[in-house]
Length: 363
Image (tube, rainbow, N blue to C red; front, side, top):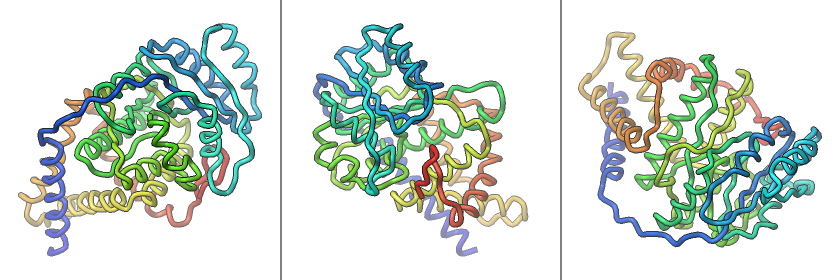
């Protein structure tokens, strides 16, 4: 019983502190308009996605000029045919294509491709994304507005998922939305947070000061590693003020693909951020304590349990209202029921399973 009270009490105190920081009045310093965007896109065997990606980037409506830097990470598919089609359809697209050299042991293959693209970038802001993405025409303008509206060194936007009507893709979309709600809450409150590497922007001068990807070091979650190092060194990190999604990615097609993606996020994120790892353990412990109490009929201090989940629900409700993220209630309820099973499978297999991503063993 003492352990139950401790876990619930500790989590409740943290949530109250988090809420106080989230809701406190804040003075926002305006930023300076950027001059030029460099969009860096490493890709490997993405011929099926390149046309949709590049056509959406060719139609961007942005207040400043931008360039698109594609970095081929040793692809062996028909990507060149797609690039020829794109250049024929969009003659004015500001596109350059480079071929990454063989990676060193200091970085993953993707990190190596990202770094190679940065070497040719001319923009004062670097925007990183992936090849399996499509964008609304206002995506780059959203980053331009963010740079003007708020002084920061790093922005991350929200990525949503292109979903079909099957429950598998809907659950992945709900999971991604919840991750971004959580990231927004933590970042706005000034805590260590996370994002996705397919939708983030950083000042080039700051990126260079960090030493680029070699300076960050080998990581299977290079986006999280970048945020961790930025926070540790005192740089400004912010979600885009307008957090509506202008960027979309695709769901995994199989349970194995979803599992490997989650394994990379959990394993890599836990390694790069002890804070997020501890917070996750605290959340799961409280879920377990409450679930056990309901099943066994031995629910100690029901008011404490109720207070914990009421505060957590309020924080998420507040974030959803402010960010205007639409969550399907049926999908959310189904995901909440599946969440303990997902965590149990990941927790049991994590110590014994290496992470293979895009054909590369990264852990």
